[in-house]
Length: 166
Image (cartoon, rainbow, N blue to C red; front, side, top):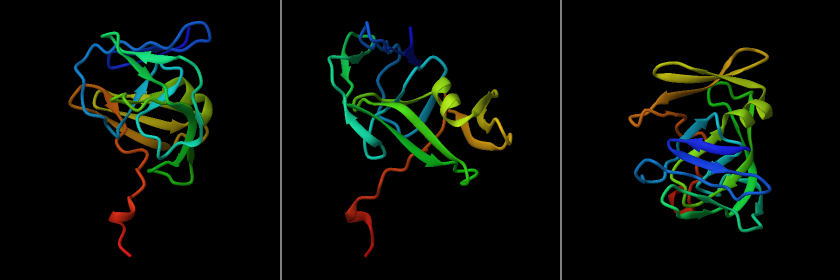
């Protein structure tokens, strides 16, 4: 059965059972970092500004965290971005669930493999995403203070009109 799991978060996603997440760590402020998750079947994001092909989520499914609280899945979609280390490589996050109240954005490692023909290398203090074809490094993540691998700021939020100089 597919599920989402990272930092104590688990979400089961199947046609028969609603998604579940078990948060074993204390809540933290939402982050713009992305956390690779080898047990996740879907990517999970907490803001909708960068989601393309946004489709409202229909159905009663929620991601349920460890204290029993349900987090609504607002919509689904996908997003794409250029590799920050090699901009000729576009990367895709498909099967993306928008869950506004989730505190960590999760990258499904298996989904990212399939969509982008890449592989991950995990080292003691950093991780790399490399092209299966060229072996070039496309992403570099670091181990955060929480001990989790993370890719900071993969998707930049659009600037608000008030912050743009005219």
